[in-house]
Figure 1 (tube, rainbow, N blue to C red):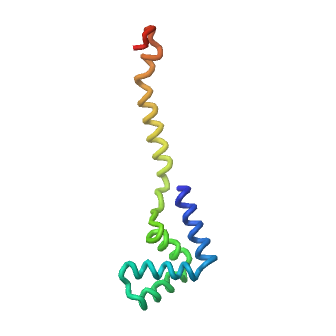
Figure 2 (tube, helix red, strand yellow):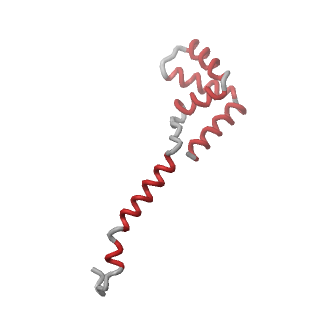
Figure 3 (cartoon, rainbow, N blue to C red):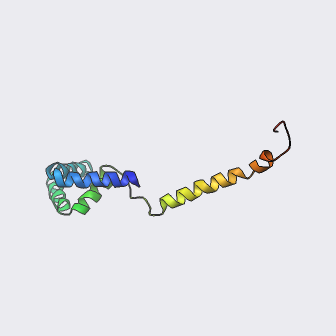
Length: 103
């Protein structure tokens, strides 16, 4: 989630600080997708009018990252915690045995 947030902030910063470069990047992406030059200019201009749309476009097609699910971190942490707990079940008999050899 942190990587996503960092990249999105960076993209918004570029939209604010270097709008001409961002417009050119959008147009280049469209050209690479096969849109003809005159249409790509029009579409790039239209996209650049909305900062959120522009950032979303660049996120998806330039930096190619998807917005992570809201509960992804909690689900991942739960899975890891459960794995550790399940992995500890075989340990108590070994830890508390009276054997001096260990196994």
